[in-house]
Amino acid sequence: MSTQSLRDTLPSDRRQRCEVWTRVMGYHRPVSQFNVGKQSEHRERRHFREETAAS
Image (cartoon, rainbow, N blue to C red; front, side):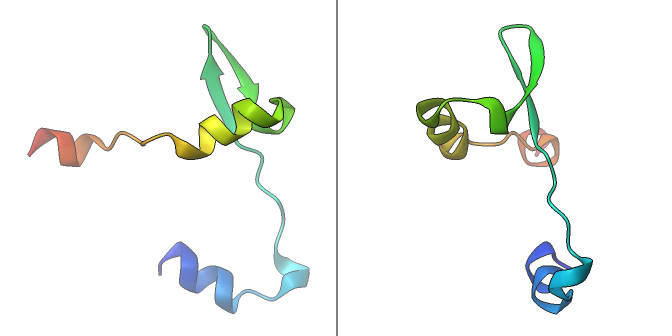
């Protein structure tokens, strides 16, 4: 089941926020603690997928 369809079918009372962490300058930090500009930059990133890169 895709994330989109799961989100659409899961009742609001059963959902919970997921904290996203990323590696910045050699250490890990939650994206929620980034300033507004860095959060915007994080949303614009292109994510690497190993399966796609290997083919």
